[in-house]
Length: 163
Image 1 (cartoon, one colour):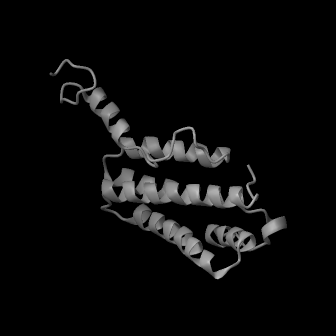
Image 2: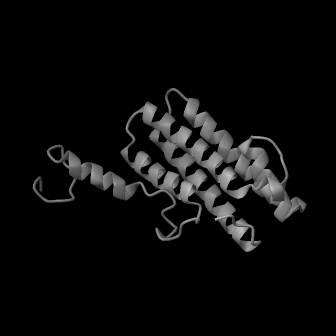
């Protein structure tokens, strides 16, 4: 079995790494071809998938948290247009909330705003946790990809996409 390609063994660390890449597919329920159309966001999400798959240490976990936070900031940059959504400051939470409020100011979208804020908050927690686990890294990565896809669907549904 040690010589069979694709089988993880101590003698074949490269195959073990490839197997890990196959297992750690953030947003795995979504087709690979389904991208946001926001090039910077798509590039960071691809980087997130690679980083999560290669993660081994608590420092790797912190790096995933940092990247997730950065993805949310880039998402805010991609979605928010001050001329349309108003000048609300530099906070990613405020800019994403402004987009949601502009598109659908009704009370039921408060949950979407809370979800976006919670994703950013969790990314910050994982980024600063000294003994973070790979499970936490996977959870924050999934939450981030979900938030990206929610905003993509939300802005597309209302003709607000700035791709």
